[in-house]
Image (cartoon, protein in one colour):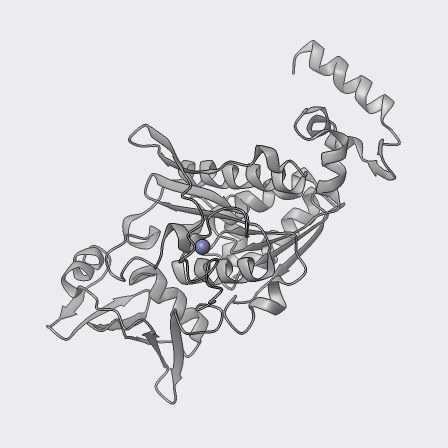
Length: 365
Ligand SMILES: [Zn+2]
């Protein structure tokens, strides 16, 4: 710390022992650096402190988002994640440690514990739940902003349907390898996810972090961009919100800003108000197969899978069996049998949410 910083810090603390008044809200001195930042100021900080944010997912993007948001002093942060912590998460999921792996802690529980110790002024709530068509209203109702920390398109299209229908802003973010992209969605004002991507990419053709890997720094960049847009929205600075799709490939030293397309009047979601992921006419269904310790996943779109391409992606991860009708792989003690019509049977679990997650990670969508 420089002498100037030290002096300024001493001055700020003395002056603000009782906090800074912004309207009727007292701003605690811990936020002094954010209040000094002209883009936020006292007014913006007061708004941030009164805000309620919900974050869907608490993996790589989520641990960074949650840490930044709690330190920035949002009023309430709800963190929803259905998964538990594994050793291979520690390379990039910065809130977790080896003790969490040993204790088999769910991500939402570990995140809540750690972040409460970071900032006791924030109401942090970790929920071990799966966000799907039947839980989305119960879990997301009543929040000012949704942050995307999911790892699959079905979940993002569901968030998009919910956000557009309820008029809740949300911030999309995704990473794989050393590449990532992000943009904010302001319902009724900017393009929604389905204006940008009409449909999920076909299963079996797009790499995921579980098939192609990911490096920590790209997650840090994308999560930080998402939280920056979140702070603008929460602080009431809509004039500063980006209207571009930001993309980065850190390994290739590339970054780009592509203008968001205008809202599409033909868009099923924000143009025609058909919420197909919310009402269950699109996306995956998961059905537990009685007595077989298996779950069947079906794609409602009835898409075709290129089994050759999928075999190519899974070959480095697991031993495969394949014929022209199906492909079978055993990964992490689960057997995945994938058919050319996009259907899959996941054996080794009777939990539909876990089966959907495995499908999203290794097959796609
Ligand atoms: Zn749209």
